[in-house]
Image 1 (cartoon, rainbow, N blue to C red):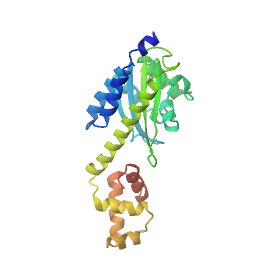
Image 2 (cartoon, helix red, strand yellow):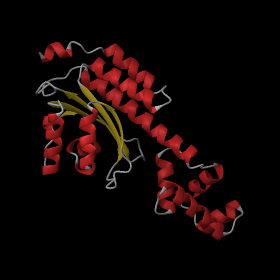
Image 3 (cartoon, rainbow, N blue to C red):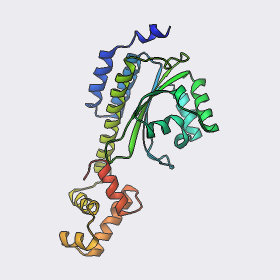
Image 4 (cartoon, helix red, strand yellow):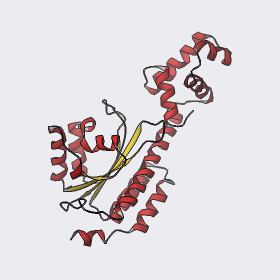
Amino acid sequence: MIETQRSRIDADAVLDVVQRVGQSATEGEVLDLLFAAKDALGVDQAVFASFVRDDQSTESFRFLVAADAAWCLAYQRQWWYSNDAWLLYAAANTEPAADSKIPLRTQHQKSARELAAAFGVESAYIVPAPAAAGISRVGVLMLGSSTKSYFDVEVGAIKPLSRSLAMELHEWWVRKIRDELLVTYRIGPEDLELLRLERAGESTKDIARRGNMTTAAVDSRFQRLNAKLGTPNRKATARLAAEYGLI
């Protein structure tokens, strides 16, 4: 049974999806591609999550769901994000793993796994998309099968194919967020220069001298940038800008 399902993997179709993700302009287009990749991989459900490590607020979490929507809604109502065993595994590891290899240490983690099983995920494959240097945002692709122990034996082509897909989806999200920061928050060249100088360790006086401004004007501009991006201070704002390649 399992071997029959695996024989349905269409590697060429998956690689085509991987290539097209980078060319996609909208979230809807990428979601359609995730559905296509799910079918080409011969699995029943797929979810991609993008998040910032150690985000207790859960505000950074983004999802692409090619799976039972009722499962995802039930999961979201429980707010299990920060304690989810699969997400924690992806945040700390780079190697794909069957979910049976990932320990469930808390009752919340066990409950989250039971919920997945209730919606047809009898076996899951967790594929981390590690962060690039300097970026705290990571991604994880979850592939689900209704066949018990489906991913507990050698998974063959699924490993390299799902890794390529996970990395491409992760890079797409990072680019999307970077573009959102520029457009939505109207961050211009002068703001970026200010953040570059802060990131380089320049003092307020040095930044004021370089920009022919008063120190009060520098502080005021940083306060506006902090407010726009929802960060607590100028150092955090500059770090956020650096993470997404703005500076």
